Image (cartoon, rainbow over all chains, first blue to last red; front, side, top):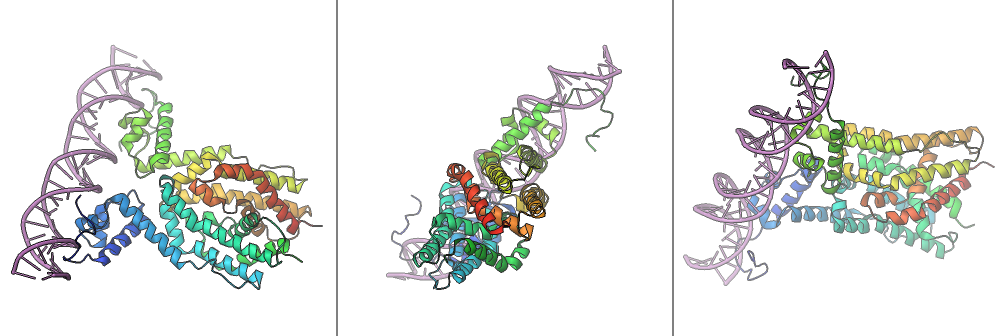
Length: 213
Length: 213
DNA sequence: GAGTTAGTGAACGGTATCGTTCACGAACAT
DNA sequence: ATGTTCGTGAACGATACCGTTCACTAACTC
């Protein structure tokens, strides 16, 4: 029991929160540059402008620091996400369009692409992080899209189909082969340029098949 | 100039090719277990049952060994792939169905999922390998599917559309959210169970919109 | 002021890795 | 038999990293 945390924490020099975030910033940028396994604690401390002792005071060890960095990035991404917000879907096509633009812009954004590049190789060895990632990412998107489609069915705008299947199809129409582009970091500018048209084409095709009346 | 390769290679003990493949086998299995950066040369040599000197005689350094392992795995995968083979497409639906089943079975197969898990994090730092991967993988699939659709257009089975766009849409219908499942290694059994139905649904939806007549 | 905690820079012991070298035996061609 | 190459096991020097300790200063509470 080295540090009796939360025990008689009365006086003493206050912990510098800015250093904690500097450490996470440094760690994340190094993860991007050279990968997780190839990034040493010493290098992180140096780039953060912090002594190694300070780093170890904030994060118990390599693994704890890694998890903290990944979780912070997840939260950032989650906070920046506006997809699936409860929207007025009087106009179903408009709602789908907005949803598609939101999710595809997000997937093609630098934070998302970077995040994926960092954690992709590591997730298989961190099942807890992998499931968190799945829930916050594709799982949530899928659920939100299902909910949207169900509301449209309830209001008689869509024919009766399995919403989960339909949601996969619609998302697939938007995504196409682009998941490979995101993973490899290629042709992303071109994707952005075509994004809105791509989403509109997907919505149009989807509604031509599933719209009622 | 340590080893004047291909110079007066007359006598001498023959190089043991089996050891070279044993090294690649060991390297790949270790890459899968612990990741590329966390796998040491010494460990690879030990698992391959080979001395470190022998390893260095076959592969100049870490990077060369890594590239050799990845390239061999690419070739294996390419050899096992039968997608896009010239097929009789009197029956367009049947041709699309066969194509879809082929490509989606492949993407969900263990070698493909494993390959992706190993190289995903590393490709961003190996642009040459990344472009090779893109060409052999999604690029080739896309091109083959485009060719198939163009033939269908020429024979009057499809309405006039941009084949590249249509190919993306069709592939997207097949894939849906499954790229995330593959990358995370989750729900792959369930995907296999539903694979044929999924492909058929995609083909049906696609043809309902684009089939002529 | 006293007491307590945060932070620094430097150094520690221990371990691991890289790529190489050495002496030696094994397998081939001539 | 001779020469040449392949392979082994062991050790090498160099470097890097981990997580900790030390002596010291800085910042805060009481």
